[in-house]
Length: 325
Image (cartoon, rainbow, N blue to C red; front, side, top):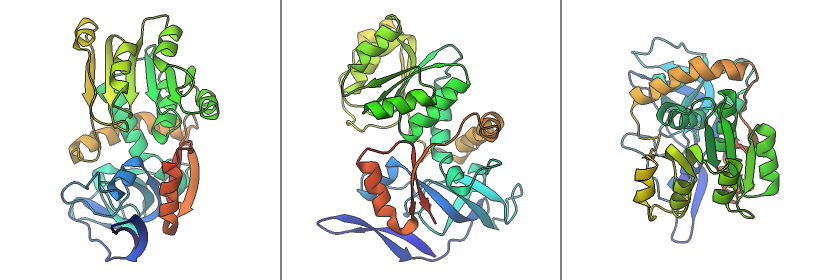
């Protein structure tokens, strides 16, 4: 099968198309004939040698796919060969075939094509598990999203609004802010032109926000703490500005704040299966009704995975980048 591999030299790290053996599913896995794969920032980090796959995972990049089931493990009884699915992976998606835990597979929503379906798993699993399952965002509360125009951000805007929350986002251009408002954001802050702390507190009449979903880290930590309301919850899912920062513990104590960090990839199949069930029950009907949708920025053929990474690295994209297999 064709698959993208990482080729490293002293001068560069490249993505190249290779021929690799067809993987064989274990008892609780399925083999998926991949039609499309999502590109995510952890893929870029893995290419750079900064995010190794967990033990037992494929070394091939790719954390989400859509396609059809080509083979079943002996203990898989809830799918059959030929079923159309999208799935969260621990790796292997940049290929013609990949393995997935059956419990992490979901049927492709009615009316969705494979490119749209491939944009769902990593993003929606991440948003649901952090914003709703962990931080327990409630109707009437306010969510602050950093990176509002990213794949995570565009999904979180729609989900939070669908469940009755107020949404504030930060983004790096006026065009991105405008797009976020079109998706439903109540306030979009161009962080290159405004102090997001001042703008968010002014919008909230000084009371702060209830939940923050942050992928920036570093110097954003102290600013996030200033933004949070009493009993506020910070969900940290990435650290683009680094993993070190000073923290004002007095504010954490006085405002009874909760600060939680998480990465999805190494979580257990049981954890992911629980999120998959919640998505199927609560989110799939919204997708099939057209109330929410994945936002796709661009589509590249599998052989041009390197160009897809360049597109993500230049920071101009809005929504998801997809590889068509």
